[in-house]
Image (tube, rainbow, N blue to C red; front, side):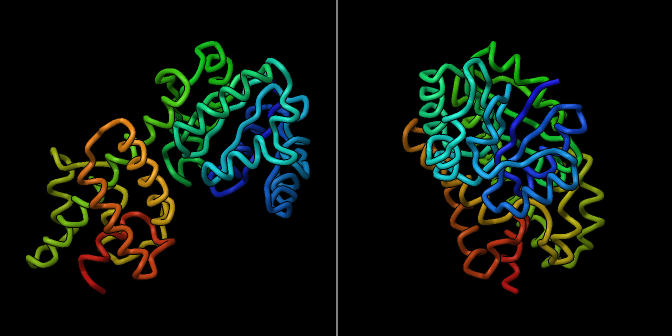
Length: 289
């Protein structure tokens, strides 16, 4: 079993770090809000530290899951950042959904310091983290990934290397692009069914086993019809992710007209006060309620 640090105990990181202890690893955590790290340590019987550097000291693997590029830089190369104390030969795995550019930047810094860096954003949401059923998309050196994969599988149902550094983040962008279009289509379909006087649940039961079926349909249609949006991935987070996608598209020349439009729609949801509603709340802007 390995000595592992986990940095960032949000709705994803908190249970992910917990799964590492259940797999038998020795885990040390850091969180910007210290009280949450203390709570985690008390719950799981492992230790916490007051800085990312202290948490990373002497560890074989350091995992991170924070909010965005700036947060990631702060906990890695900022004051008392983890990179100050990651030992030579260790592997740093970043689970933040961030840009491919910051992954490449931190990979170069890590290599200069003598340790490996793998970008590994996740999909599956809070429920996936809590149930140890995340999908992890990785980029980085084959050898470093090979060492990290068994550790990652403590909280994942699937983990795959997609290419060199940054490939994990680029794949997560593809994931978010696909979800954006699916949720908008599902929102319009359910809205149309309601306006047509159909039983929305009966309609979904009829079409969900055919070509229209999707994870979003199966897991979100009931709450969408019930006008309930306190589940899953928040609109603010989705807009952050879609912004990353659109910025990358400007660099690589990809055309994302639907993604850009759905991003605007999520902006309207934010204006309605839905910053923390889950992403299925796109249907809310159609109903106008």
